[in-house]
Length: 105
Ligand SMILES: [Zn+2]
Image 1 (cartoon, helix red, strand yellow):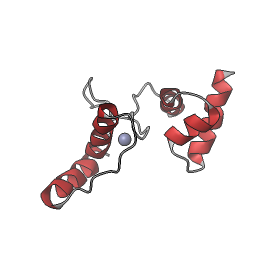
Image 2 (tube, protein in one colour):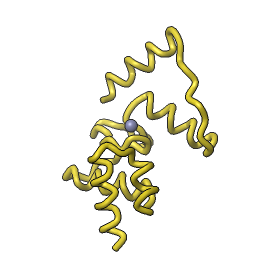
Image 3 (cartoon, protein in one colour):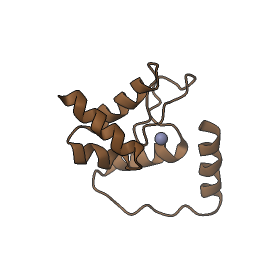
């Protein structure tokens, strides 16, 4: 039965909902949805903890996110589990994050 709920969540995600929202609506954990997405992709890849994208095979063992952007989002989420406005990166920092995101995806 839990499995069916995860399937429902996957459908919501495919329809454009974020994994976090879909998990909340259906009543499963986010990690369950991420794992289901990873499994559906047909291999035992690990999924990004923030957006659910599969990590590349070359990702280090401790890597949990697909990009610099998601890594920042993850550390921010873990640091403060309440929603906060995302600070706007400016200048060089923003450029570095953009390049990192491009290289890792
Ligand atoms: Zn990600």
